[in-house]
Image 1 (spheres, rainbow, N blue to C red):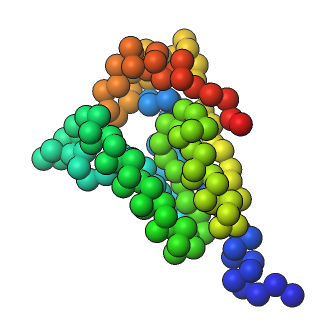
Image 2 (cartoon, rainbow, N blue to C red):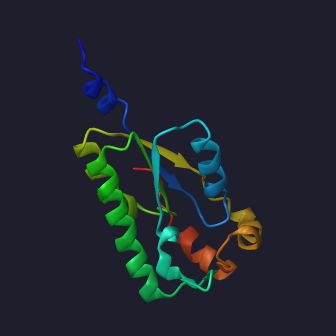
Length: 150
């Protein structure tokens, strides 16, 4: 017979969100958490240093710190045994999500991908609706860097 802890461990999940800015990742996360009671969202966007007087201000240096912040938050969530962890970044390639996937699997988490496949004909829509004013040019670069789920 399984103990409660063994059952909880088997139910732990890491949900890796994948998609370009403006593609609907955050909207999908909002839908997912409606049915969850114990979860942690880890995202570079939650890095407090991105904000100047409440206004998002991305810089390459801040992006580096945001990535470290997200990894620290993720490690804490794993250590605390959160039942569901949602990694809400663009996760364009295996290089970006691979370390999270490996740590989660090593801790006994089931890994689930929630992928919003990029649609090249929607880049203008993505540019108009993403929260961080990512330009069409940058979205095109991100589209070129996109890797299918491994």
